[in-house]
Length: 259
Image 1 (cartoon, helix red, strand yellow):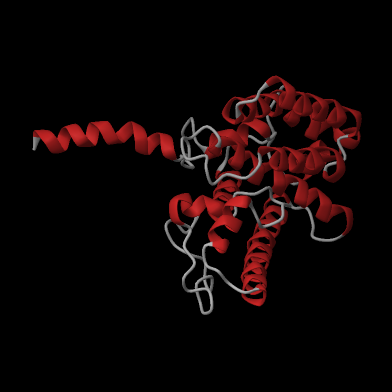
Image 2 (image 1 turned 45 degrees about the vertical axis):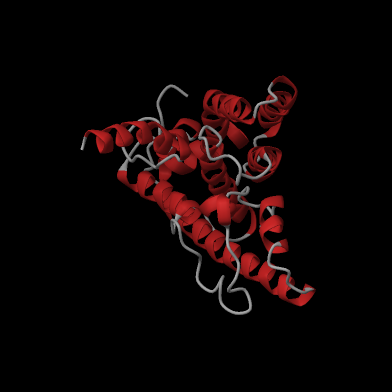
């Protein structure tokens, strides 16, 4: 019994450091990270939205999405990479990575079989992204066409990509995608999707500078999150002469005071 207790004590730091949880209503999780970069006050409606996006990235755990291992791909294994080999790319990112390619090469498929596998990933990413877009539009009362679709994509990207930034603080970094791609998706959300103007450009320059200043991905991801926390909520509310501030007020979505 003493040996088992000792083993448990030794394993707890490893387990807690290898992954990051949503931790609803608590500090230190994906939910807290998301709230830190968004202008919204904490409430059940916003938390439900954040958790739904979180699940499209991390769920199912230790399983494959439907159809992935159907013939002729039944021998595919994510091996040492675990569930993070999938869907841990930027929200608008290409569903492929060196890690995925490594595991596919181990299967020794012909070109047609490989292409069919890639199409499964594209289709599943599209399905999950469509769900994220729909729930983002519904929660924030935006839209799914024209410029309103860009706004929806911008908010969806910020939530999704902030989750990924948090994952760089864990020990299980091997499956994670190139951090530059995640940051590029954030930059696009701020400037192109949410129309943040010169303020967004200034934030993006600070994000670019982290590439020179911080070679360690964990440190850099943490700094990016810090910059977003400092500047993004205010940028959103003031963008386009206060368009979003007015929109959320009209929709009775409460925002943080003092920004």
